[in-house]
Image 1 (cartoon, one colour):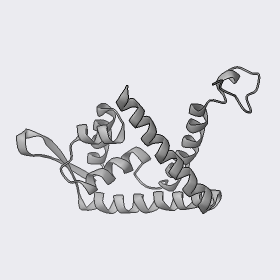
Image 2 (image 1 turned 135 degrees about the vertical axis):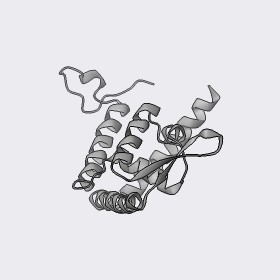
Image 3 (image 1 turned 135 degrees about the horizontal axis):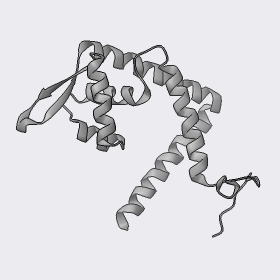
Image 4 (image 1 turned 30 degrees about the vertical axis):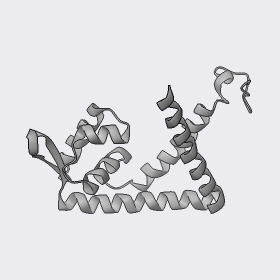
Length: 156
């Protein structure tokens, strides 16, 4: 099957401008901009908010587990955890087997609740812009696409 490049121009990089990866990256960047804007005026960025939310949801989780779940490098998550610690939002505690678990402080739980509320408001605005039917269809399509690609990768 031959790929088409709908809307591709003739300038530099035009041959790849119509690829699905490029369109997904563009839309992802726009969605992330909305999320970052929603967190403006707080101490949190999207990566910090996602890490903090994971710690609130699962007290004692370690950096390696969170990095794997969020699809981020362990180094990036360690740096984010250090920033959240400096902000007073999480603390590290040695657990069973000398693993270091992350735990949210009261300030961290409050910041997480506010961050989640702000991100949900940004997503609600995106739903309004797209319309509920289109938003739900896009979400369902992305879920099916993710599942199909994961299944395909498991069979390779």
